[in-house]
Length: 85
Image (cartoon, rainbow, N blue to C red; front, side, top):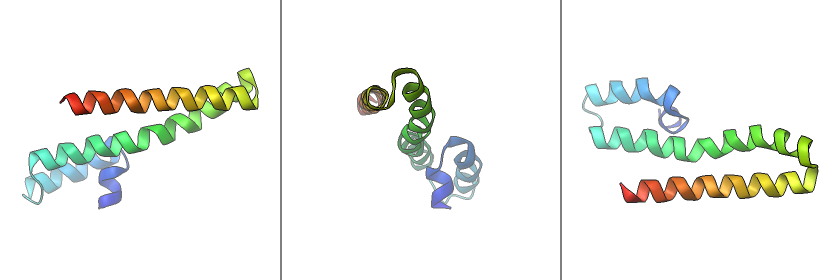
């Protein structure tokens, strides 16, 4: 069950909704699990997509550097956004 909650919102929402309905989770715990799952999994999907895109356009070394900077900035902005709320 934990993999479904942290694997992404599409897989986690039905399970989270069922667990909230059964009072196994509070609303805050369910939302926190889905948001943290997306925060952890989105960079993995982004790296898989961006690696092919940037290395084909800029070459291996510059493409990897651009992908790394882009992914780090995305993680940083998500972290700042989540810490504000």
